[in-house]
Amino acid sequence: MLGHVGIEAVLEQLKIKAMKMGFEFNIMVVGQSGLGKSTMVNTLFKSKMWKSTLPGLGVPMPQTLQLQSVTHIIEENGVKLKLTVTDTPGFGDQINNDKCLRPLDIEFLQRLCRTVNVVPVIARADSLTIEEREAFRRRIQHDLRAHCIEVYPQKCFDEDINDRILNSKIRDRIPFAVVGADQEHLVNGRCVLGRKTKWGIIEVENMAHCEFPLLRDLLIRSHLQDLKDITHNVHYENYRVFRLNQSHA
Ligand code: GDP
Ligand code: MG
Image 1: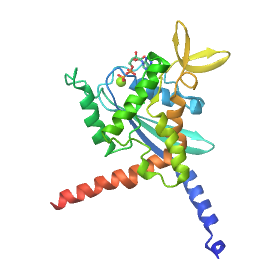
Image 2: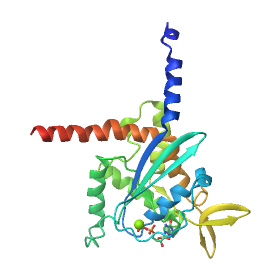
Image 3: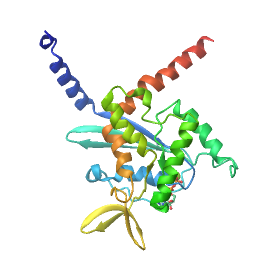
C-alpha cells in the first residue's frame, strides 16, 4: 500500500522547492581580539569551493570595532546558498581579565550553548606544534565535559546509529585546529590560500597542515541543514517559550 502514498513524489517536491528557494545560513564568529576571527571570515568566503564566483575580497581588514555582517550568495549547480557571516569585536577585551579569562570563557560558553550551536576552534594553529595542538584539544575537551558545556554536535540530538558514528568522530576532533589566511600563493602550479613563512607556505585547505577543511565541511556541507534544524527546533523554540512566559508573568 505504501506505494500509493506517493512518498517519492513528495521527496521530489521538497527537492524542487529547496532548489528554487535556495538555502540561507548565518554564522557568527566570537573570541578574543587578535585571534584571527576576521581573517577566518575571509578564509571561509575565499575557500576553494566557490572561489570563482566571488568578487575580489583582497582588502585588508581593519580591527573590528562593531558587529559586522557580510553576506554572499554562493551558487553551486544552480542552487543558491545565502551565507551570512557576522564578525564581532573581541569578546572580553574591555575587562581586565588577565587572571580570570578561563572562568569568563566557561561562563560565556555555558550561556552560549543554551542559545546557539557552538563550534569551538583552536585558532592560529600554526603557532602550535603537533603535540601542543593535541594536548590543547584534549584539555579543552576535558574542560567542556567537566563544566557540562554541550557544543555542537550535541549527543542528545543524534537520531540513529549512523549519526552516532559520524558525530562521535567529529566530537573526537573538536575543537578543530584551524589556520586562517586571505592571501593566495602559487604552490606547485596550484593557487592556494595560505600563510607564507620563511619555511614554506601553510595551506589552509591542506589537511596535512591544519583542520580548516573539517570546519568548512561541517558548517557548509555535511551539517548545514542539521545546524539550522537544531537552531530552529531547539534554540529558537526555547527562546520563544521563554519570551511567552515572560510576557505572561
Ligand atoms: P581578530 O581580531 O580576531 O579579528 O583577528 P584578525 O583576523 O584581525 O587577525 C589578527 C592578526 O593575526 C593578523 O595579523 C592576522 O594576519 C593574524 N592571523 C590571523 N589568522 C592567523 C593564523 O591562522 N595564523 C597566524 N599565525 N596568524 C593569523
Ligand atoms: Mg576582527
